[in-house]
Amino acid sequence: MPRIVLLGPPGAGKGTQAQWLAKDLGVPHISTGDLLRESVRAQTSLGDEANVYIRAGRLVPDDLVLRILRDRLSRPDAAKGCLFDGYPRNVAQADELDRLTPIDRVIAFDIPENVLVERLTQRWTCPKCGTSYNLVTRPPKAPGVCDRDGTTLTQRADDAPAAVRTRLTVYHEQTAPLLEHYRRLGRLTPIDASGTPEQVAQRLRTALEGRT
Ligand code: ADP
Image (cartoon, rainbow, N blue to C red):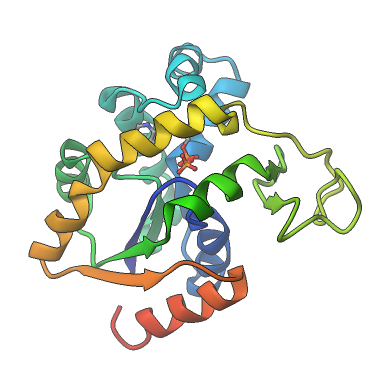
């Protein structure tokens, strides 16, 4: 029952890797960012409230995120294990996660800051299946549409330059301290997240081999 957290700055490629790894491990990919965007699209009251923070690149308040996370974890597929992407993002969330479900491994994505900005501003995403593309390094086969389901790709509002800057600052101030938190608990494995998605996937497999 692997319970793994992918930790790293926005643009580090957690979402892409999480989709692949979740399939390999046969566990659900739980992305709080995706869950929040779903509630924004569904125009629930939680979604409307969260959207103000998301668009600005700030963290959505912990109690709102916890509500959607609890909901997701109560679904039967989460009993097989989980791959967390984008949660926890601060120490309070890490403590909450420890209370909800014990974490075996935390994989930290290491990547230089200049690469992040480039990746985020060139990113286009499928609103239906969540697949991310990069116009420079990983363009879709047909311009503007998803390889998997043909849906028209969109750019996330929070990939605009001002929101990207805020997200990076929030990461350094609130999320990066979790690296030390998990290192002290002996659960942290850093990987080099630069290079192609395939190279990163290989490093991730090596890091996880035999030790989950
Ligand atoms: P990225 O890691 O590229 O910023 P995500 O999809 O993980 O992308 O998150 C997008 C936005 O959703 C965040 O900037 C934040 O506003 C909100 N969000 C996602 N997960 C959390 C969380 N665990 N706590 C608070 N806000 C979150």
